[in-house]
Length: 316
Ligand code: PMT
Image (cartoon, rainbow, N blue to C red):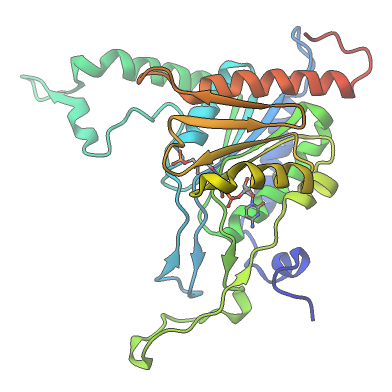
């Protein structure tokens, strides 16, 4: 018998994605359309993962374990990748923050609207420009075929999607990038050992053993998309181990960069760790997006990587 933390066993026992064939077809078309040569040369394609994965405790799920992530970083990064000319595959948690919607208030978006004297609903004057720009940017991305959105909720859906995206993106070689900002569960209940129905409380306290989710970064790097430029993230709560853990991920999984951040300060500061250097990026003022600086550096590194892997490269 294979262990639950073995990737083969994980995929063999996971409930299969209902629309896997349709997703694969959408990806094929999206990548083909964005790979046709243009005046700018072949387009770069990035897969941004965003939001937290859930771990169901029951097959007919009432309860689940969640992972911390609002999806803000992934959504903001997607906007800056699009601005930098990338085509973006946005693999996101259902209900998490979406590109161009980051400014929408949680409580309550109704304050964006007014009702005029003729009972017509309008966007409030104070927010009109912001909404108009967001609609314009979003429509440009979708109509221009630059943004493909693929949702997940559970760890089972996320890892199956990642595999389909990775094996599809491998066709563009070094032009492909992975930006793995999603907060991915480290522990799970294998589907075949999960309670089918709601766990009953009458039986007293709950003892549950969680298996380890196999790390897919090695497979991504070595098998699924060996030439892609890969950036993983490292979130820690203890500053004493952050860099050490980022270095470990860089070397063990042969990532091109690791973005290290601490839970207490991740909105204000990140450290981009590569084999050559460590760059600390800090937010200078309140209105600035940290992601703007991050994407500038990473996109530049990606260009250099493409040049290093492509004959006759003339990109600067
Ligand atoms: O969404 P926000 O609220 O804006 O927050 C952004 C963020 C803090 C979530 C983001 O910046 C971040 O740090 N994301 C990664 C968090 C995380 O899951 O770290 P980790 O140490 O558990 O995982 C490290 C890497 O391994 C990740 O890139 C993950 O994709 C990968 N992984 C994790 C588990 C697993 N079983 N397989 C994996 O491949």
